[in-house]
Length: 113
Length: 114
Image 1: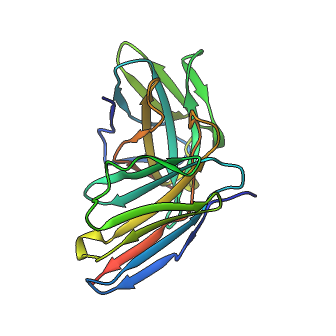
Image 2: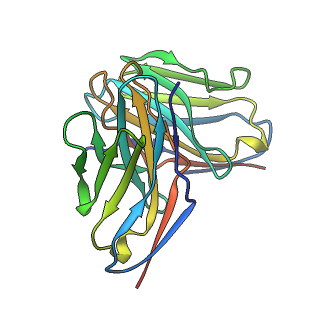
């Protein structure tokens, strides 16, 4: 079985400050981890993925995510937030034996000017 | 830019009516997903196709929902009869290969059943 948890429904951050959106996962095998972003009235857009290799993964729009196997976490980060980063962020996971990702419930990121 | 196209974008219907949602995956993509998004449940997988064959539809209420891929350029999701609890945003996503490492989502169909 595979599952993912996003413990925060909403994250508020001031523009220019660093941001973190949290994600923890549970899989039976090796995890394949993903972050997607959803802007209002749009579909989800791929940001980044971790399959194997370096624990720090860089993605689109200056986002990065850190894989931590011992804590089963895959937190999304950005050094300096922009107002335009305000959106809904989804973490997703699948294990090596499944080709279907399971999505978290999403975290609303609000960046204040 | 290649994109997944979903129609209609919005649908308002009355309880008991049939609803058909359509999806055109990105050309060359052989995998299609249908997801439903609600505030209460988040994103739920309804169906998963690879090479037009349904591989997983365990998340779909079988008594009223059906999903098909008549050809490689069209996926359909039907609800008959529709109920108010079906009100949600329905997303189609496509991917290439078999590992589905990157899904491309359409803009969704917002369904309201009165």
